[in-house]
Image (cartoon, rainbow, N blue to C red):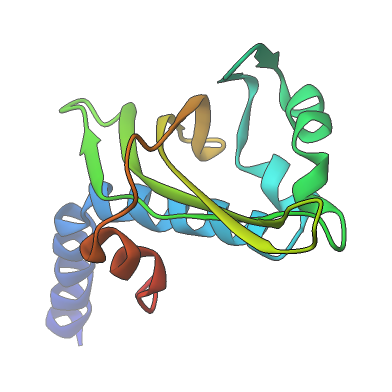
Length: 161
């Protein structure tokens, strides 16, 4: 009986050692987007570090200021946003990660026509044993040209997290 338990313990340790931090961050980024996609501001804010910064036309500091700035995305009838990471890089020490990829905002213009605006986001994630991966910095910029098919496919693909 001792040997099977020891073998299970060692398999568990090997699985933990083989866990891919980049995949963990990728799945956190997707879950972060899904919180916005489902208009769940509480879930969205839970992904933010207490000292988070969102940099755009201005700098938004802290979860509550960021939530207020993003309020339109949490309002029924407001614009819909979705993003997915194309790149995920984790530092060797496992404390910081960068995600980068496309985003799409779907809204209605003043004439009621559906419009799409595309861009690129960059998020910096920090890992702590108490809170897991949380966003410390985020910035986005509009796309210079319409998205290619690969970019559209990334946002339309089934999530595997």
